[in-house]
Length: 66
Image 1 (cartoon, rainbow, N blue to C red):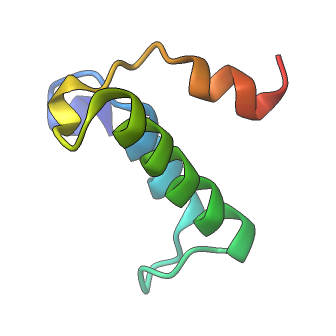
Image 2: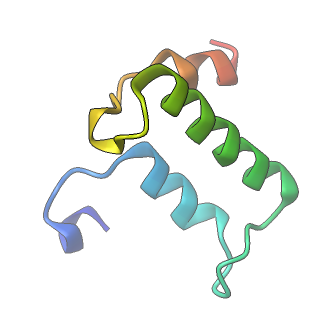
């Protein structure tokens, strides 16, 4: 995927790619809830402009428990 886009991938792009079916639906309610929570936390921290969102974020580590 990175080679196709010719740029580094963002966490959200990878997550959505592997957690959605071909029809665009999430594979589970849990995966859908996670990305919605991720979006919400990123917007709270960095605002609505996704270009301002950092890829190295404590949101990921707090969700994973590390």
